[in-house]
Image (cartoon, rainbow over all chains, first blue to last red; front, side):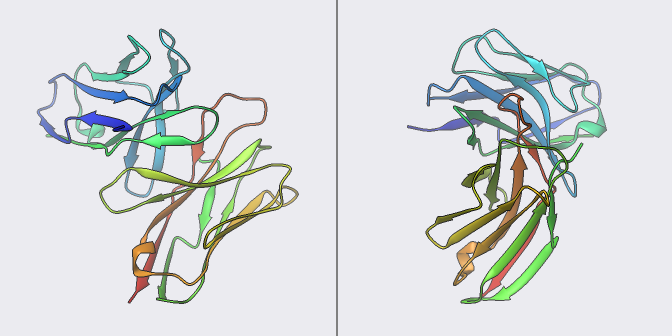
Length: 110
Length: 112
């Protein structure tokens, strides 16, 4: 039982490049989330998925897209990376209220 | 938009002492949760308290909730060096989804 896994762990992109962050959970949870964490800002919700095939914008969705193709996986895509997207990205899943977090992806955009 | 706000932002204590962290929030909630984050890791759920509860215990953790003051406190008793971490409160919205709004977090350092 791996919980929530994220790949990659680290990534460096140049401005304008695209990439997809992968997230998978093996707890059979319906809800999944993408957050970004910046120093002094806490966690901010980027996108949320209540169930397979549904997604909803969070607090900071601009510059991101998501895909929930099945119950296990929820991916986050940056179409044209910007330096302002330098951050640590966390995926989480939940059933009822408590959320379970992945180890994070540290992304640097130069 | 931050819902929860932890106080103090940083706390440094000696091993064996108690640590108290406070959280204030703005809107009505169904429940409030506390999470811990060790350096370089993801958040780990510690405890959840519902809006109709006033106090809850889990091991060395004690959480209180005062909905009239829109505030909560997390007490860690007999702290250990391993408790060194950042702590976050998180709230949902009454009548809302499972989405949580996290505070900015507070850094606890327990010195051996």
